[in-house]
Length: 563
Image 1 (cartoon, rainbow, N blue to C red):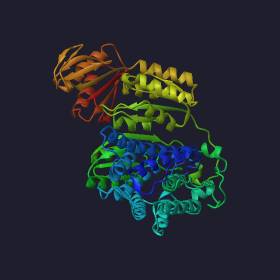
Image 2 (image 1 turned 135 degrees about the horizontal axis):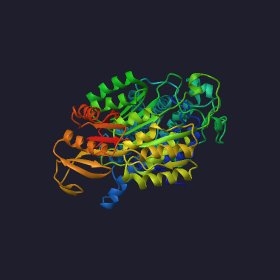
Image 3 (image 1 turned 45 degrees about the horizontal axis):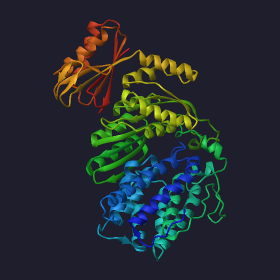
């Protein structure tokens, strides 16, 4: 849809740019996913960039809606720019999405430097693009040429060498980025082997094309994605060589590379984040930490997902944690001859209540969605996790009775996209652990689902929590601060001591028999409670085993499962 070109960079230009960038990334998403081979050939760079831009655009729209509701007219440039940066930061996905968020933040820092300025001109845009490229490069622990960072620097260089209005500067930045993108295969061997340009750089070119369109009203030229084609090779959109096989490439790093991608938002101070960078840099690679002013987005590839999350806990408050298991190695990153690989036949997607369990589930091969206390995931987050699992068949474990309808809606949407999804109505993470323990990907799908459902159903679950307010329960009236023991979702015990209440709950559960007790300790659990309960089981219940896990900030003080 045509729009009126913007003369200056004001709040309306920010809004227009976000909308056009989202549209451009939406058109290019599948193409970018198909050529994604670095740093991990997981086929989701286009999707990650789109979701990041979508979050930025939504934040800007919210600012405009707020001003409309109060009758205060158009927001200031600073308000719109900060909203764009904040939206991208909290919604950033993947390596390229995280870098895009920092690019937008860098621009916003310049655009919002004078909060009273209604707009800026070509000179301001030049400065914003320069600061964006520099800050993004600083956010990456080990910058690599031939990536989105190279394209961003080239755009800033080209803009800096140009005099004129915003349209002239934006067009120069786009042309510089486009030229740099075409050269990326010559800078990065993995791109040259695959015969494609850098996927993240391709996405940034789309975003900069939208910026140029914002000020000129002219749609940008098509961007080639096959290496060896010059930017002037014509105006017809070019698809990747053999896109079908590229789309089916393995979603994993090379042999010996990290097994997990860990992403989380983090509330922490600058000093703590500096220490976190050093620790994460020693744990893995592809480290990108972006943000500031107390809020950060952390992205890293590691073998020990739990350690990466624990590092965040030591630094501050991590939340919206996403852990993705990459799976098998990819021939693009090992230098071997490319062999097309089908999507995984089967995967498990699970909602988990704490960071520790997220790491445990991920190590078992599951794609996880973290549910913070009071922050249940929406159906869209579950659908996204199903897509990330990159499998034809998916077993979905909601691990919470209250998520039954949300999970069902997500399963229906995923089925509409051609993915076979089975929803096992697990009501607790300990039931999910039992289901995952008997999961056999080599079995027929229906048989596997039956076995997992049976294991979950045979697991009684309980939790020990602290009451937040006075209320009526099945066991009587509780007061704020009382310790509650819930069995299968209902309050069965009201006490004053966590260890004593947990022992009472465990005795009631084992009175009906059992072979295995699973204890998941939250951060608030007393140090001695696990040892006390293990001793109680060993001395009072013969032939019953006990396993203990650390759940992190999971809401409940203790989760108990009895199989």
